[in-house]
Image 1 (cartoon, helix red, strand yellow):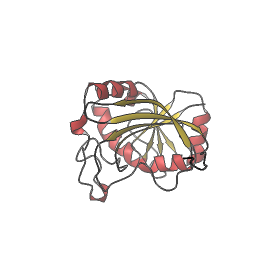
Image 2 (cartoon, rainbow, N blue to C red; image 1 turned 135 degrees about the vertical axis):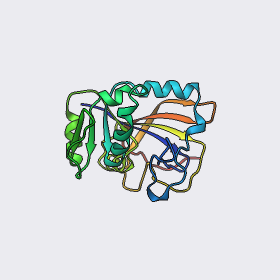
Image 3 (tube, rainbow, N blue to C red; image 1 turned 30 degrees about the horizontal axis):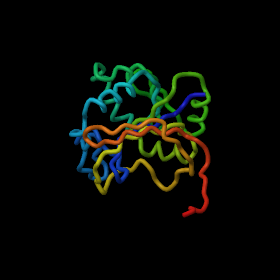
Image 4 (tube, rainbow, N blue to C red; image 1 turned 90 degrees about the horizontal axis):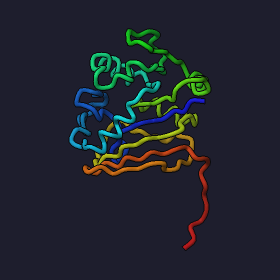
Length: 197
């Protein structure tokens, strides 16, 4: 079975939209694109290099469009994204010039992909896809980079349709710029009870 890992840069209020640049995703008149730009440091760079090693990728349609227009022309920075298989959840397109692209139709296709042989699968961006994966309990790991910002608007990583699930912290770092990097692994069901004082 293949592991599905969601990787996301988020603000303290859970916004994940357009972390990389002002023109990355303007939907909803979002005006804070590129909000991560002033937070890089050596620790962050090392972790990003590790996460950008070869994998396969699962992308939503909008993120795929952004990636397909950019990464084929910037292969020197992230060669793995061009070489890995890009699985795209969409019902509106069936072909792409970006090599190693496969189109999926629904959550059942993702479940079959998860059960297949092959490298682990990373989900970058793709807020609507992440919502769908969490609703169907298809996420094995979540790697968050939490920035010391509140934006108040924009696409959020989590919505109210996620299936309740417990995770355990497997690794964490705090960068010199205050970015909390936290990796969580799926660990079971929610445990409830009374707090004893």
